[in-house]
View 1 (cartoon, helix red, strand yellow):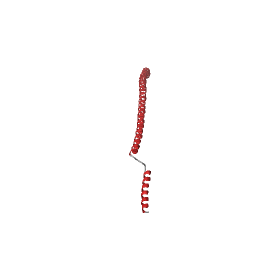
View 2 (tube, rainbow, N blue to C red):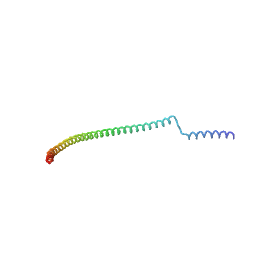
View 3 (tube, one colour):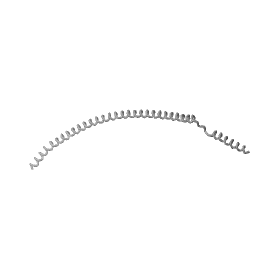
View 4 (cartoon, rainbow, N blue to C red):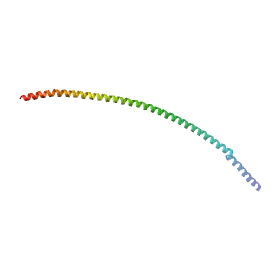
Length: 133
């Protein structure tokens, strides 16, 4: 009976080792390296995708920047044309205003001279009438 107990204990320990090893995951050096390599390949693929997205983003950004520069250049040219037109119109209006002021000055002087020329003889006549009294 004693021997039976020893055999049973030995058999039980041996069986528990077999079952314990079967329940544990099997991780050999090659299995670990395979998983690591798999992960590296996935990371490399993701990095390539991100790099591709970045290149596309930079290309799109450069295209938008070029479009904006061209649009700004056209707008600047249009504004310069409008400014030139406004300056020309301003110069023409200034010349017309100077001419109009000169014309008005001449008319005022002419009217003033007419009034003075009419006023002086009348005053002289009045003075003569007053002297006769």
